[in-house]
View 1 (cartoon, helix red, strand yellow):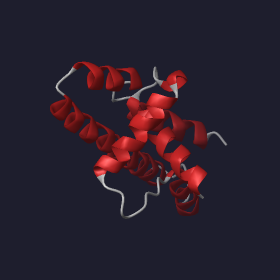
View 2 (view 1 turned 45 degrees about the vertical axis):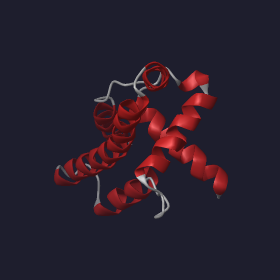
View 3 (view 1 turned 30 degrees about the vertical axis):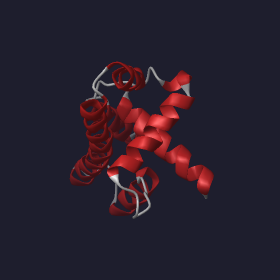
View 4 (view 1 turned 90 degrees about the horizontal axis):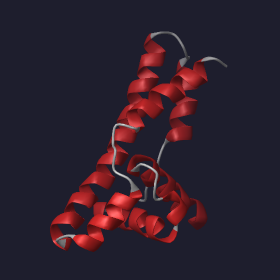
Amino acid sequence: MKKYPIFLFILITFLQSQSNTGNDLLSDLENSNKNAIYTYWIGTVNGNIQGYEYGIWLALDYMIDNRIISEKEKNKLTKEFELVLPKDLNEEDVFKIVWKFISKNPDYRHMQLSELTNIAIKDKFKMEK
């Protein structure tokens, strides 16, 4: 049981490396050159997904290497934390999901974009199942 808090601590450390918030995204899109800012935020949102996946992979491999978890536990945790996106979804589509979620949910805007990206994607595809 002690091994899961260690894993979550490592994961949260990776997720908090990005400091942009939902408020930053909305403010930039309202007050700046739309094309340049739009492109920046598309890259930022999609980079958060890749960072999330890399952070999970790195943390789980660390835990395996140090015999904190077994291969079976690693596989279970990988499935639990995996973000499954439809194959026909492109980077702009992912960004629009996050942007729409942030726009409609002001209570989340203070959160870091790395957290919001995962919440928005899970919320979107949970409702479509």
